Image (tube, rainbow, N blue to C red; front, top):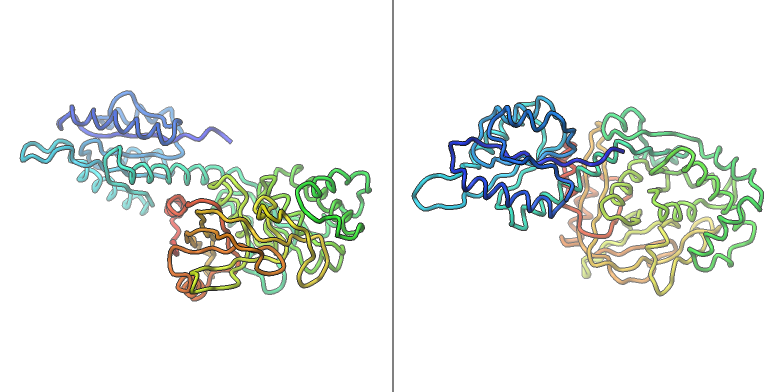
Amino acid sequence: MNQFTPVYLPVGVGTFHMESARDQFERSIRSLKEVDASFTVPDEPLLSVEALRAFLLPLQPDLVVFQNLTFANAAYMSELLRVYDGPVLLWTLREPVIDGGRLRLNSLTGAYSAAHTLRGFGNRPFGYVFGAPEEESVRNAIRDHVAAARVKKAMRSLKIAAIGQTPQGFGFGRALDAEMMHTFGAELEAIEARELIGAAKRFTETECIEYLQQTAQATCGLENTPVKNQLDHARLYKAYSDFVKGHGIGALASRCWPDFFTEFGTPVCTVLSLLNDEGVAAACEADIYGALSMWVGRQLSGESVFFGDPVSLNEEENTISFWHCGMAACSLARKDTGAVVGVHPNRKIGPAMDFGCEAFPAATIFRIGREPDGSFRFYIAEGEALDKPKQFIGTSLVVRTDKDSRSLVEGSVEAGFEPHFVVMKGRHGGALKALARMYGFPVFE
């Protein structure tokens, strides 16, 4: 993937108060560089359409921060949109002085002109922030848009795999390759689960011993699993690892039940858990958009994310419990238990993960949802992951939400969201909302 390139476009005209404009220009560059040192900035304010054109010509921006350093008419934004169709953050500066004298900048009027032009160019989505360069709200908005634009760019290089079909009644997880490419720029590759099962069956014990050792090091209690299931897990782990490495897969959604119990005799849960800690966003029950949600969460948090169902609501604690039947990254496990290996709660076959997740003070719940008409939307909620033991057989995580948990559950059910959600470390609501705007998606908070 090419280097990420955010670009600062400070536009204006020389008839306003240039001393104030240059002061704002220099302060803006300092703030932008403190947020992300990779910002490309001009040497001087861009005080004509020709200057804007000359600065833009050699660049291929991934994000444009368009600032009305002073008032500038619609021709400036029109010139940008003539050659650029990526994310835009429109930044309005405060008037530096209100003293009954001259209007120094008139940045806000310029913002109205630019925004009207954005709407005129096919109703182009854009982000907006108002404030002085040092204001924390401005820096946060820039930070969020940089993070979102990085994800959007990276997604265009993502190859995501569908391993097998969704089980009956789980059609919400399906995706079309053309739809995935058109909407997100990601490449969707499909393979039947039986192909990886077949590959796993052909491996010798010697070929798989390193995978068994890796699993033993990452988990607790693997020795309690029958030897045959341990070896079959190692075979499956090698099959998935070979496929991921051989095809350049960054995210995957795998069919799990009933095939891996009935046709192979060993679940895939632990394999997917280990892949998540290797940097591959791996979802179960063949939920493609669940896997894509996991991948976005990993890009923003830099860590493995939890993937599961909302299964319990506690109004007194204002919490929602998320659970899945045997899959979670080992790195998420409570430190006092470690990543315990057990059996699948329904099939009673292992190895499957069986632990509660550690607490973390900031958490974001997220889902890329798909409407019946094929359009997309984001689900976003924030809170904290609590210090709670395992809630049920399988893996679990309890989140105290900032907003009323009962309203969140009732609202998301009534809105018809899918039953799989991602929980990531950190507060990333701002970046996710910025990303939703870049795609033109509505947000359910």
